[in-house]
Length: 209
Image (cartoon, rainbow, N blue to C red; front, side, top):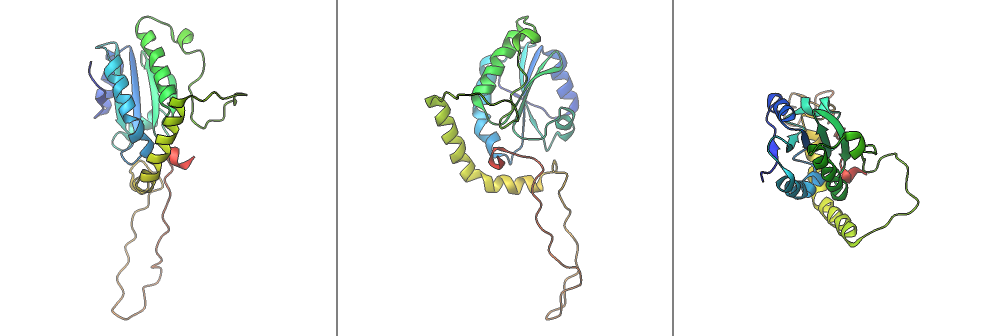
């Protein structure tokens, strides 16, 4: 089976939604560490469950396709959105492999004729969201390994992620560099030539939680 489709335009995105009963979209950024860590898992799901004109997997770069991201309310990366007949039925925010796998399994049932109300009985999951906290948490070896891998990955990627986020076109707070005339050799610096402070990205990744 084929892997995910890398969306290159609004037209291609609309065509993907109209031709497939179910679309699972990965909204990501190149500078996002958690996006890179969960990408292989998304690729495996795409190859396993993609079905022509039934189930499609898409990757949407939020910097290159900012309009698509904003239209679907994407404010943090990674965000996974499942569409059924063009409408959103499930949203997963954050690099959560188990939640993504569970949502994809349910989405495949929709392509086989299931109803969204019956398949998705609970609202979309949000990593670090404000929903109710269960009284007990049951940890498995797989979950613990996923957490360790995420922490190790964040250690090596968080610096580049901050840098990329600040430079991202998807960052509304990005500042244009100020133009200041150079001071003469040995002379005082021009008035107002204060170096601007760096702006943090408006978008959050798992490293910010």
